[in-house]
Length: 201
Image 1 (tube, rainbow, N blue to C red):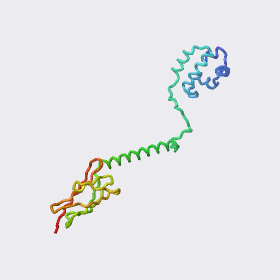
Image 2 (image 1 turned 120 degrees about the vertical axis):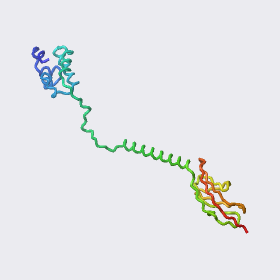
Image 3 (image 1 turned 30 degrees about the horizontal axis):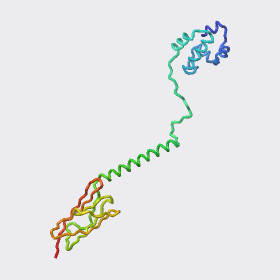
């Protein structure tokens, strides 16, 4: 291209005016000063424009350019305004809120599931173990989970909102044991058995 320009007596300045390419870039191309030029795709466009202006075979000049141009890694979207430092923004707030909501929902569902499948809590205050009973009915009291059902000697007993239950059980001289059973909605049971000593006069 340099030979064609000189042969046609066109100065670098004039060629720059024709092709709209800076004179310094034309000089760098003719002297193969690749470091003074933009990236390869841009220079390839320059080569094509100069070839057309000088009426030189663009296929040949492009081939020579590809052969002689050193391979350099392309800079990928350099942007000095972008910082690696994390900046809090509304999108991050929304994402964090969504994650927290998911964790709360998962935790709540897991908590409910565990409560549903586990055996209910059951504590019996009366009668005490091997308590002496001298009269009937016998008072039976205790506490369980509010959603559980209570059966005393297989008889259903009302459970209050706080889980407390109280009932009076008819017993005879042959009664040796009181069985208190708490059953969850899933069918899991907790059983407490209290031996008693019946001593009717």
